[in-house]
Image (cartoon, rainbow, N blue to C red; front, top):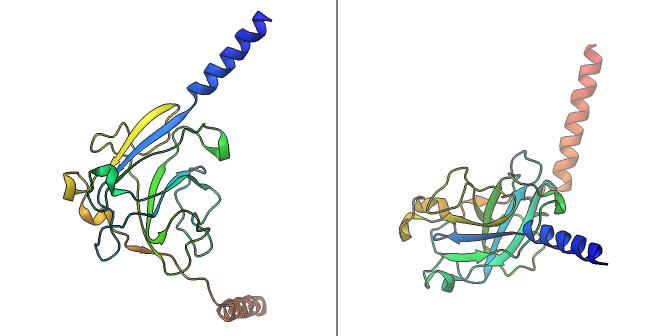
Length: 205
């Protein structure tokens, strides 16, 4: 019985040791026009589980690729950064490696959506603006570059110049746009063109 209890305790300790928490501090995040992001709008933390670079989101998917995993979704709350409009701090719930392909050393990326309110949306839709940030450098008091640790708590800070950070204010802008879904007629036309090209190649042979 004692032996069983010791093994159970060791398993419990090892499980706790694998827990990871990420404390993120954001500088001023804005929309494409430079207006600070309002409270309640969506921010996401993603991991590149395929180690092949992050894929742009699509109209039908926040990640655009099954290799990009959303670790946490939360909403802007400027009160956590002293009431500075567009600035925020968020601490992820504790999570473990091995879940959904997460592994130490994988790149992390912060992505924000100034026009998507709350965390319930399942896809961004075409034409939606967003911003994103990742770096391999260690800036503004961060514990490391933006990569998953093996365990423990790390601080990742993305602080813009407007509140004393090292990152240009433009880095906090949502200057990217989700591409539209091609119309069926456009897809049909592209398919017809490809078929004609293949037929012409066969004739030349």
